[in-house]
View (tube, rainbow, N blue to C red):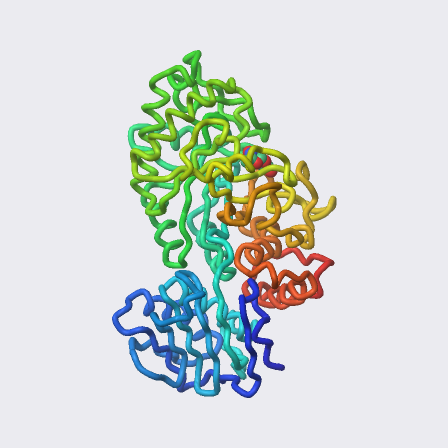
Length: 495
Ligand SMILES: CC1=[NH+][C@H]2[C@@H](O1)O[C@H](CO)[C@@H](O)[C@@H]2O
């Protein structure tokens, strides 16, 4: 097979200087060297070996060594200053590959690129014939925005630890670095909270369409956090409030203003539920929830929702948020929330997550002017639950139909009127799961649109090119076929 081009990678690297004379052949003799004294570099080296060993059949020992090499070297320090804490430089010549970064996260990003520079069959779990050629040259690569995220709604339909880990594996290949878990909504509460057992035993017992739900124990959640961390993905947990709270209200009558618990809800309407802003128990409950989430979450942000509080009078919404936001800070975390949260008086460390349609005026210009960093999830561009076309069997269409070209065809740095690129924290692709029930469904909606969003969040604006992206995406399709990813074969892409 012809050697690939050095820039045949998604997200496309920031700078690529090919040198066809310097291709490297993996072989029996290839050793993976990692920065001496760095346990994280060694772990990244083992993760690379875990991909390469089954398909190549080569031993590929991982050796902590400081010096030169004739193999693959993962080194820390003295990298090009442009690469920052998440970028890397990757140099390929006849004697081997050197990936150099300032921090382990950069090494991890570099091995995702290296994977893609090898033929798709390298992703096979069974021995394949070679050759295993890496194209020669030099890459210097680093992210444009701090956050490239994915949200999985585990409330409308519950997803097991194994299903979430599978999704994490897929996200990591595209340099996604944030996984936002939507852990509670009207249809289900999905994480155990000490002192409030009915939240999960009852509030977690069902889901949309009434099938059995499920929930994460503290152990399950910590296992997901650790697994994501090993792939340099930060988990952001969300408890949506004061709206989208029927599961909690159904579980504890005392949380309701009228002292009566509503029934469990298995439909898909929104906006009908609200915490009781006037009851003190509400804030005791929220304090217990946020304390537990903060205890289990090493990441600096907790998401407190705030969307569609149509059953909370506007003045009550502000009072509620103005009591809850300080609770997040009390437990040492920063808050993020859907963009309505700016109606209250959040501190400027709070990150509004914009979910409007198009560049509608949701107060984001004012928020940016106040100093907020904004996370972009425009519903008509990034919502992975939107149908591709009218014929898409899964998903919804209230915001827009989103084929691949629409998912790719925008610039996060210029999307919101009067919001400068410097106020954009990054992008995130929400997958709401009213119609999504298993990994195959997740993959059908996320691939290929999430890699498009990942490129918008990672690659320089100057590299943005639909013709380039669609041909690189076609080559990703071959990898997904080998990996068993159930992707949508968009007619727009020359798979
Ligand atoms: C932030 C937000 N609130 C709503 C809206 O997005 O649309 C989603 C479906 O697309 C729905 O599931 C969600 O509850």
